[in-house]
Amino acid sequence: MIATGGNFFNLLPGLLYILMTGSDPYLNQAAVNNMLSISTLIIFMAIIHIICAVVLMFLWVQNRSRFQGTGLWAVNYALKAAGLMLIVMRGTIPLWMATVFATTLFVAGEIILYHGLAAFLQLRVRQLHNMALLALYAIVHGYFSLISASLATRNLILAGAWLFIGMQSVWLLFVRIKPEFRLLTLSTGISVAFYCVINMARIVEYFIYPNPKENYMESGMFEAVILISFQVSAILLTYSLSLMVNKRLTMEIESQEEKYSKAFHASPYALLLTRRCDGKIFEANTGFEKLSGYSINDVLGKTTVELDLFFDIEARDEILGELGRNGSVRDREMKFRIKSGDIRIGLYSAELIQINHQPCVISIISDITGRKTAEEEREKLIKDLGCALSEIRTLGGMLPICSSCKKIRNDSGYWQQIESYLNEHSGTEFSHSLCPDCVRKLYPDMAEGIINEKNRSR
Image (cartoon, rainbow, N blue to C red; front, top):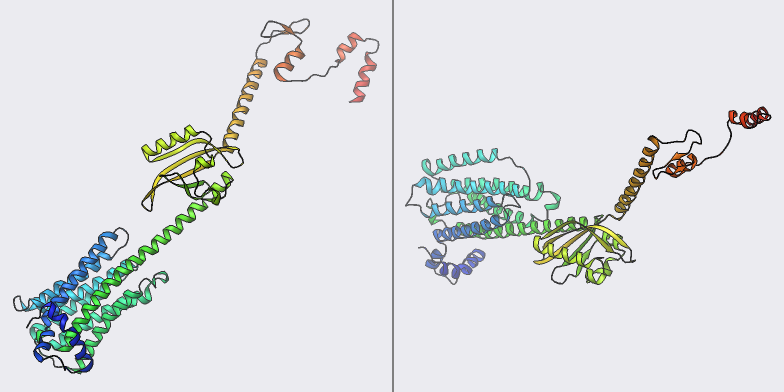
């Protein structure tokens, strides 16, 4: 009764013909029964779910550090594959395992898929009602499996639970999704919606044909179509989930490229990207334009040697050696020759990086010419102040002065006029006049008149 894989796929066109026309002009009844073997379809379905679980597991391993939830997708398929295998083993294992426990794994897998989708899309969802549904499903399904056996009711309950959870996923993927993710989730939303349509068809079938056979393995053509549809849906969903991850990666790569491109070009420092193999510049920013005077188009495809950018070639060679040994250079003070020929002083840093699997060098130059000039002026000012302080200390000490002529003896032992000494050591300028006592002493006859005249002129 169980068909082989080759027989199944050879007879698949005939099955489609039967579904569309309702007749079988080419196949005999034995071939149809072979083609519609439920156990064969379930085995194929289990194999497909195992393959899908493996594919999604690899997807999770590659992206677990980037995205959440992808591992739960693989768990969903693994649980469903386990449930399918338990159904196939019916007759060799307890009935409750082949019916209640097996289908409960289906519902649990769907809940886990829903949670994984929410985690991947950075959305928070409540699962309390779904946990209650899972427990209620196990109880009700157990009742109609072990106490009041009814295959039709069990199929209805399974389809209803699956549809309820699937609709939550559809709502999540189409309505709750963030605007920037809408195109990202379109294919996955359609795949989940296809699952929902299959379960809706199963519910409709319950009311059209309320009394199917009680042995599930003897189910007819409709159940075979349902199982084939589930297999197609599983493949489509796996593909759409993989596609969604790839699109998300592409979005993040584009976002990172835009972010780093803006940071590169908006940086106030001069930035250069060069290939290590030939030293040619393939990217520069506006900071380099401002520092060097070259436009970006002027430097692309050229080397720093061709631009004569480094003032000291030996220092450049030392930097390249250090870069090769350590992979980076930090804050090396260097002189650079700009387009006008002027010399600028900068702090040079560099790092080895990989771009498109090619070793490259990113160079960062901070122009410190103004700072160095200010430092030099500060040092000169400090030196001048030191000299002035030294002279002030000299003036503030004990000076040998003649008690008669008032000359001062300098450090060399020579006597100087006090005016000359002070002018030499402090820069003081003198203007000469006579005090009233000296006027009376030198010009006694005219002293009072001279003094009064000076007082009136003030």
